[in-house]
Length: 365
Image 1 (cartoon, rainbow, N blue to C red):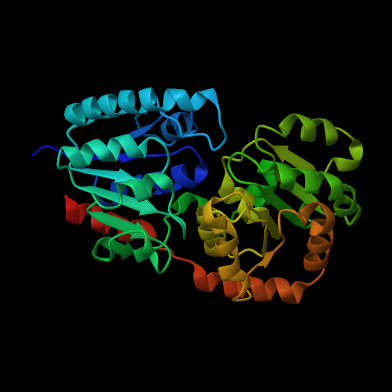
Image 2 (image 1 turned 90 degrees about the vertical axis):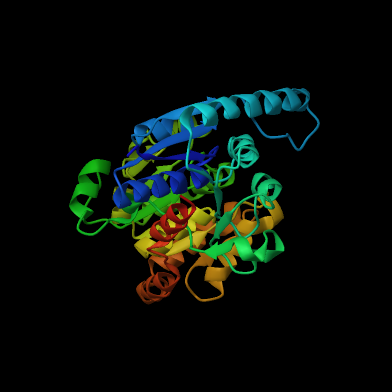
């Protein structure tokens, strides 16, 4: 009997790629007799990260529409038509039993053509406000796996299954890894550690705020793991060449997030859905700095769900340059508050989301 086949499509940011890989890994845990192919967008992160995770990927020539007026928008119709044609060839050649979309540019053409060919489809929506691709596909999809309540505003109610957001098991498996983490990052076992993660591509406002307050944090003998993203890595690298900052470990991108989480006493993070899901699972005190330009300000809504239940703290993006340092120092000095945040954030964790999504995938098969 031939293997079942699944296509997983989407990407663009870690917030789409990481859940896609988590779903693929969960499918493989369920059954080795399933062949998985990813479809992403050429030139985007998934074309590198998916092969690193051990899966094959095909690329489409597709990008989003720019919000500002630009000549790149003139290419969008051509890119869309080209991607629809290539997606058709991929589907006809691979012959999947199910196509899964996780959001991002590539998932639109792939799932659109899968629906045209009557192939069962499922989308996994990470956020409280869906992206344009998933809203475009909503009426034609068979199943919609969501993480938040009241998503029937955007999707047909009968298609919705609340599963939570899938996180990679290897990322949240931090038990007993403290020594390995110290060796990996070159940390001092006697110093408290602050982890700064501005998302897979970095966050300029967070980077600037950390830069501004770095001296006061180091003066308190804290050590930092600082993921800067591509745009700030050069500036941060030059900065930490100063011997004063020998305990600041700068990384463009952290592949071993399990070790980063294992070493952290406090986390500073954007409030993307997957970042939140991971932080709930690893149960770390966190200060969220939501991305203000996120659609419908959904990152602030994501963060406030935890702030209102006393499970996290939040600093507005516009206020971070002025007050982030003071908030970090205050929380690092308040062990009771840290314990309270850790205990409360655990209640929001969804450990079986990948398995619940895979249940729906196998139903469609």
